[in-house]
Length: 118
Image (cartoon, rainbow, N blue to C red):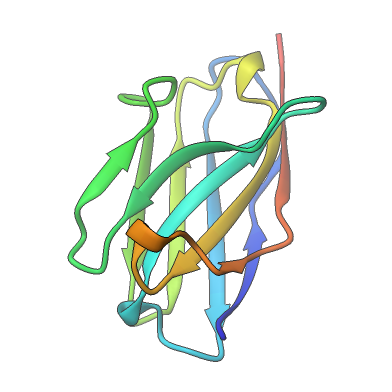
């Protein structure tokens, strides 16, 4: 079991940038595929970005070119750099860890709120 805690959320204006962090404890994330998901009010959870143990990345079409996912296994942290933020990016962002992303992510953080005003 890996414990995940997100930070870095906040209220920003459209066009601004934010960097989210996810601190892991209990296990080293080097053994896990990692991802960010988000959930906007009244909507289902949505995949944002993922990074495998081998550092291959994947992004949703809605954030591709604006967001960058990265991992620092030495610091046991996952990050999400978000640029050119839009009001549609407003959501609770959660990080997730899984032994193999094919089978899903079994460890989740509580989330951090990101609000983008127009």
